[in-house]
Amino acid sequence: MSAVQRIAAVSRRTNETDIHIDVNLDGQGVADLNSGIGFFDHMLTHIARHGNIDLKLRCTGDLHIDDHHTVEDVGIALGQAIAEALGDKAGIVRAGQCTMPMDEALVSCALDISGRGFLAEDFNLSTPRLGEYTTELTTEFFRAVAMNAGITLHFQQIRGTNTHHVIEAAFKAFARAVAMAVSHSERVKGIPSTKGVL
Image 1: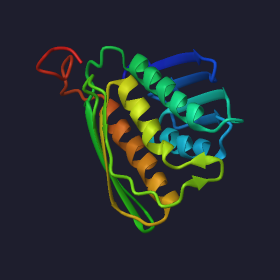
Image 2: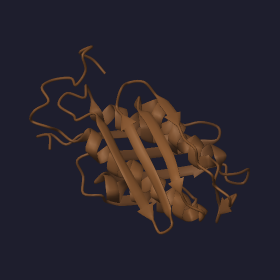
Image 3: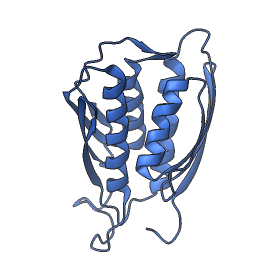
Image 4: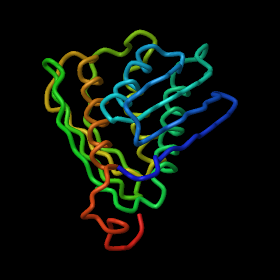
């Protein structure tokens, strides 16, 4: 762990959402979340718990329209907070991966904190909504995080028929891959890149 905790606070306000998020990458997995969407909060809790990230979120969004702006904008703010908390990325492992089962579902996540935002995924989500959450927004959320954190992010849905299980496995796998990638290694000296910058 770094001597100084890697923390960030991001506020983002538009005509569609008003968001404040606090992130501690060296936390204990404490989650204090209110996005206005119960299932989404449940998934974000997995990022905190399985990523050992302290995460506090307050979001007021235009949910009278739908949940798209809220989910995507939280992804933007979270990505920005991760990037800010990482700083120059000196000493981090940089890459992480996890294959996570959730009952019949199995989802793999591999990521590289490369400075190049990118998302590839093959989610097959048969149920369009879970509570007030539109399941296709899972892709929009992870794309927003990846683009704003500078993460190359790949998901593979190996198997799974229950949409809740597939999405939950994806969030857990992402969290554990992030925890691996942001961890420090005494063997990593400086910026983990042949370019000297990430």
